[in-house]
Amino acid sequence: MNGRRDRHWPLTLSLLAGVVLMLFPLPNWGEILRPYFIALILIYWTVDGSFRVGLGTAFLLGLFLDVAMASLLGQHALGLVVMVYLVQRFRSRIRFFPMWQQSLSVLALLINDRFILLWILLIQGSRQLDWNFWLAPFVGALLWPWLFLAMDHIRSAARSRAR
Amino acid sequence: MPDTAHSEGQRLFDNQVSPTARLVFYGLLAIVLMATDFKSDYVGKMRYTVSLLATPIYAALEWPFAMGRSLQKTARYHQTLLDENEQFRQQQLRTRGQLQEMDSIRLEISRLRSLLGASSSLRVEFQFAELLRVDLDPFSHRVLIDRGSNDGVVTGQPVIDSSGIVGQVETVLPGIAYVTLISDPSHALPIQIARTGQRSIIYGTGDTELLMLPNLPFNIDLRPGDRIITSGLGERFPKGYPVAEVMSVERRAGQTFAVGYARPLAALDRGREVLLLKVDTAAVDQPAQQDDEEAAATTANQEDQG
Image 1 (cartoon, rainbow over the protein chains, first blue to last red):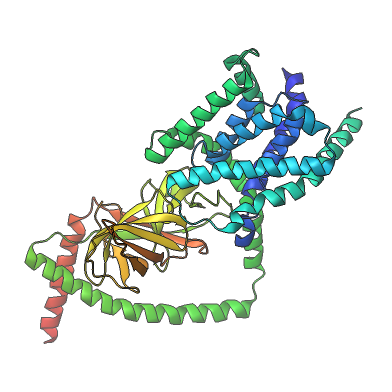
Image 2 (image 1 turned 90 degrees about the vertical axis):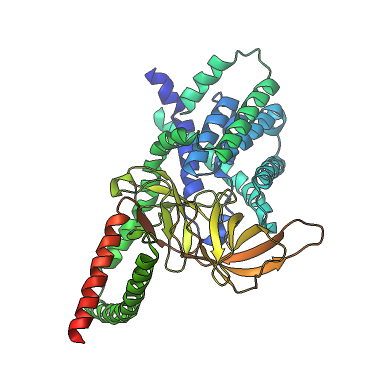
């Protein structure tokens, strides 16, 4: 039991960091540009495959995020479930893509997520959406290589220290 | 959390279940949850329990800002404090002067009311609260305040700032509370036009600078610049608080209703300090009597002087 929990700490810790980054206060203009950190981290672990990150994880994480961010219950959950499903589907390909192609796939995933969000917002009766609604996926895609390298680096450093 | 998710997933589905079936299952579950959350309060309890888990994260995010504030306070110069003090004193004097005028008006109103035999207006108390430095979902139009059930905050309490209605308390936790802004698309507020007294309902649009009056009669007397105030119907918001200013009225041929657009007066996305209103419904009768006594006392005084 203990051993199992130990093995899971990189996943738990990174997801927690993701939630904090989603809530971290930014100035007003930065709020709309905020990359979807938690999705990036979830994509990382799904592609990586060290843990069995599946639709269940995505769903529960999404629900937690919905409560923590006070959004409509199920809004983030739906987006993340669809995203993890797509990543699982194309995992074998995304894994061996060069970095820029990975970034492009992440961009496609994030834009797809925005379409889901747009659908939810329009059903709720939101009227005003600016063009900058579509900027966050690009910020996320630009961030992807750095996040990927940083996570790899931290993990290998932790592993070598453990030895 | 991922642990439980993992085992949950295993219990719910064997590996034989196709990923697409899982996607459909979770997707439908999410959609049902969203519909329930939007239309009713059934999931409020769940929201409350899970929010308790999020509280430490909020506290951790708020901590550096609280530290910064307290440092700033201790590092203030004596002279600045004195200057500020003087400034506040003058401001208070000015406000007091204005209040005196208000007092006489209130007395007059309560006297007129008692003549009419109408019930006295509700007594309202204010409680100061500050917004937490946490960015919630930018599309959900909710904010967090630093007062909770420990401070006597209850669900449904109106929230205002110095210029108008901000929103109402939605979920209350021990130290914090979520406030739904009037700009949230799910928020509706009973209002009246200050100039004409015409009543209607104003809705949020998902934009902090725009509110909507979607069902106005076609021949309504409404001009840009008109003030919109709360009507007090629905018994959640007290009567007469400023809400918004009319920007435009749209009358499209073929539509049943005219549509009005208005700009909220409160600083919905910029303000940091708000006031919670405590409408004391239980004490409605008592203050009325008190007012009458006050009124009697003042008239007696006036007579004495006369």
